Figure 1 (cartoon, rainbow, N blue to C red):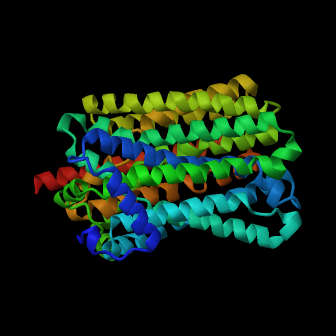
Figure 2 (figure 1 turned 180 degrees about the horizontal axis):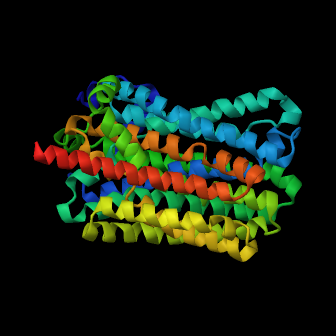
Figure 3 (figure 1 turned 60 degrees about the vertical axis):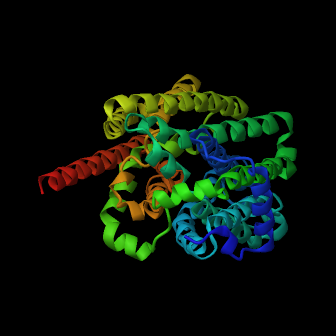
Length: 448
């Protein structure tokens, strides 16, 4: 790997790296605790952007960009654009791996987070359909694609580094640390929207209030950028990455030699990723369209659920270190399958049933999502693990989560809530099948 001093990044990237080096000048070692903090801060900022957009897709975008449609159809169109980021994400990973090979990890990360921040804050300045017509929808789509490309490029390898340096009996604990960024980001995003929605009239909220959340997202990205750069520019960090062979490789070569592991890894996490949007974005759309429950109250219930999910993520690390990460993930897939059977009754059971669905769903999400990342990425040959882990996550998001709000809302609105069960059940079945195939392949490898 080329050192950063031999690269030729853009001036903005050079200044950021120089400032980060000055901040970390007295750090002679990269402690595991520092890596863990970098992981949580980095993931929390990304998830905050993610959830700000998801919540706005329900509360704002249907009225702002699709006023010519009924609320259901407008929400479905907003969810179509919501999926664009997940489609673009693996493309962003491929591009960013090339950037890293040529200019270095810090330059790649700076470019990715700059694109994420500018795409996010750019949405805050968009005019509505009544002012700009079809152009407003096109610009929203372009900026959403920009978010996806940036998320693909923001992979820093910190979770893999943590996992590879974890004691054998503590891998579950270290693996769950990066996943804590999801509930942290969701708590901040939901709390902010709840405050804005409760404090402003609906007209003011739709006109300008919602835009503040996207400005906050930009500010958080700046903080997160420095938090991560202060790690990746240290020589100690570079040496750790080189020792673990955590460097980008050719995606074509990866697919050709490790394609099976890539698919197994993506499908092994499917139950968690399918549940992810069915307790965050989809329920909010259902409440907005078909329930009398207060939006502010429901957002606060989701905040409580996110705290429960954070507790579940922490508990998953303790559980996985005692019974095994793959067994934990498989057991939770079975529990999600059982939970899916109660989904229609709970969602259609008024305020109490909806709140129970949310809280139980968040607990299951935390327990499963805590071990969804990297559970089978150890299958990759070490030289492919850096790129393989990134693309595995991209594919899991694409297959399991990208279209979940769109499919769940579209099917349940037209054919009934039973289809939410079908969607969740299919995700659980895919997880169990992938884990079973992985176990069979390992047994065959041991025999040979």
